[in-house]
Length: 380
Ligand SMILES: *Cc1c(COP(=O)(O)O)cnc(C)c1O
Image 1 (cartoon, rainbow, N blue to C red):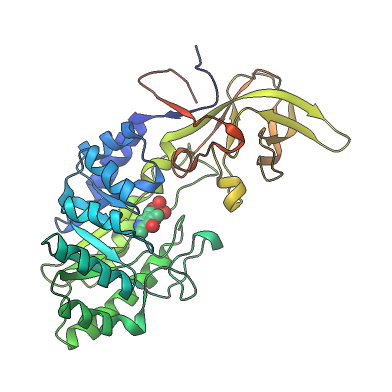
Image 2: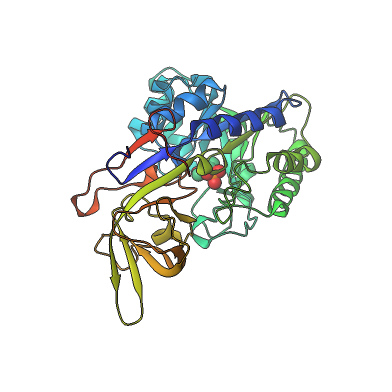
């Protein structure tokens, strides 16, 4: 029996295999540390599996820091970035003694120093540098260009490092970068490594020695062919850093992977409510919409969609659309599917990252439920 649709279905066996693949690639490098970027999906059942596999957490809000602590992530494996950290969020992180704040501006640094003083703590910080390195991905998910709001400009770096020395409740730990998301061209990471090498050389000449280098996340997944590439090419990814990044002795290298860990293990399961013909189109109207999965509306993202119940050989073209009162509530256009009817069950694939975590209650809808492969049997 299929539960009430729409819902998220998580293949925890694939998640575990993905985590094992990452662990295998970083095993030769004891100074590599992988933090799971929780904003990709903070479902407690997934967090539990990721935490138990020994990963740290990368947070972008006080709520995420708290969720990470509640899920059992050790505080000394939690990092926290974000351009707009409010006082209570900073206090949450300070009181939990997280590993490191990734600081994005001078005023933020000053506020963290003040709050840390009040709490009689010393805040460990990495400076998030805007490396002005281009990621070849969708414009909305490029973060490391000079025009983006993220990070501290390269030209201000020295000044800010000096400032950290003057602030008594700040401890400068190192540098943080994050150039964007859904990056599939490893040359973008090579460019990042080369930029980091340059920055390190300059800092070392001034006797500044960061102990932490954090290169963020962003590794992409195959949305077109999830069955061919259920697990991202982590070997190629980590090899880029092993070969191109000139780490100093005793430096630790940190990664913040989100999408590549959880995207492929999740599918959004939805039921066809109506098939509607117009003069020019045939619509498959489904009971999931942009409230459950906003990526197509927000980033023109495409997800593979399969009909799990139609066994008909004849194929037809459909615009697969949701019920939300927005013209952008479209999952795909002119998609070829086996003849599809009311009641058919569709799986929208590769929806484990930035799906459930971005769900909303727009149109007074309920937030989506979720089930794992341990709870329902669905063959996708
Ligand atoms: C979103 C984010 C990540 C993770 O990005 P993915 O593309 O999901 O790997 C890592 N670091 C920071 C600072 C982020 O904001």
